[in-house]
Image 1 (cartoon, rainbow, N blue to C red):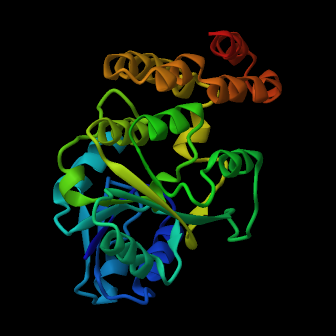
Image 2 (spheres, helix red, strand yellow):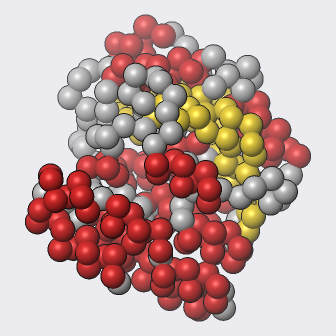
Length: 289
């Protein structure tokens, strides 16, 4: 059984599509819980009219913010496996079936990264530069079971994961918590807590998830106000020390270099000059450190 958790704050119409994509699964082995973090528009009638006992909707009495709402979702999950689905993403019909088969076939894994299809706000397939880079960084066939330093090193070189598509073994997930000092990198930080505690990741090629890429996500809106790169600086510094303590020298080197992160700051410099010239100084600083 998979607990599909949706921490909701966003466009209701995308949420409704996400819910319908869960209902269209070829496997019945799922439960869906939507945790509304106080979005202004009332979506409760939609869930009432569904009349689907597999789907639960709850609304926080106060706005918790992204990190605490994710943690609430984690606290609520109790099935064998858990996925934190984005409220604007969609599952393809075979998602639950494929994921459960992975965990059954390889009982030693704690995380599964399936193949992902990228869509824009109009449901059109596209492949922006960031996803092209992720594709290049993603492990090739034959290296599907990753763990320890090799996995840490790979992700510190460049994060090729798609967080909302990842499915976790709940028993392992319950041993960690979402870090309260991150709002953008809370997912990657939690994943590194799992990796450093011995968790294993299986990568499968089957495309069973639709990831929506558009310009107004939290991660993209924090590019020019400094939040994202400030978090990245702190994250890589923390992980470099952690990798050193574990004796993972190659991973430590990747954390100190964080070349992909630095290259990213260089890539958005032209946009910063047009949109927010004040951001240029710290973008340059991040690129050089």
